[in-house]
Amino acid sequence: MFATVIIILPSQYSGGEVHVSHSGKSKVLDFSASSLLGTTVLAWYTDVHHEVRPVTTGYRLALSYNLVQTAPGPPPSVPDNSEAVGEIQKVLKRWRNDQFVSGGDLDFLAYILDHQYSASGLTQGINALKGEDMQKLAYLRPQATELGFKLFLGNMSCHVSGEADEDSYGYGGGWGRRRSYGRYRGYGDDDSEEKVPEMGEELDRSYSVENLVDLDGRKLLDNGAALPLEAEQVVPSNAFEDVEPDKKTYEGYMGNVRHIRSSWPSFVTH
Image 1 (cartoon, rainbow, N blue to C red):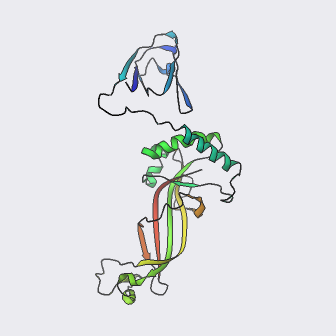
Image 2 (image 1 turned 90 degrees about the vertical axis):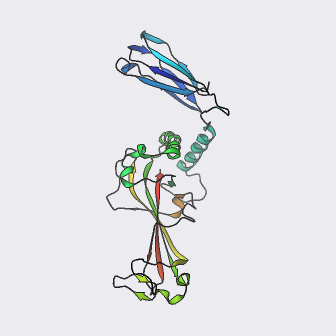
Image 3 (image 1 turned 60 degrees about the horizontal axis):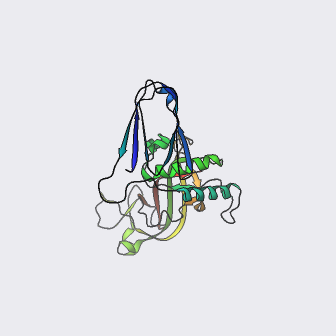
């Protein structure tokens, strides 16, 4: 046996609260107010401490199931993240109290998530998150709320510009033919395919945030507006290293400068 599932059938009662706790987090589940007209399903792993309080009036009708593992291997369980939660609290408290020696006076940080989220998807707020992203926010949200931090979602972009390495296309003069609309293509190339040289020395890098929403999906920026970020506000700091840009542009022969725009799916800031 590795878990329990209880189905509470429509039945009128009061009392009978269920107290569950794990990894330093506790919650009280009470469905008596809607018990007459509703069906409720409760489930927990065996390593979750639980206590069912007595029913004080009426009757509660419930079906109880034990989930038993028959396949070899360790049974499923809830990971103990109490140590990680403690570290989150410690970091947020130090940040709130300005106890970090380096890093300057940062109003917020941008943490990059794993999954891709569109601008329209972010209007669902926290309900748009998937997998580990949802799990991370589930642990961060109560700690941030308790300590007075706010959480948001959005799309972050990294803009990089630098000198074009024209030799990367074969020879330095290969980018000299100018199109009427201002782009450059290599000699002898099919005009239907735009060519962009590789970047040589990086000259500038900047970050910005678009489509900023709160956890309920309410927009906090006007359409097209962007919030600038400094490099020290991006976590992790090497998030855009070795990431293939999703857009490249070449500004022309006179400057030998290429601009790259890399859009990362989503971030949480607080």
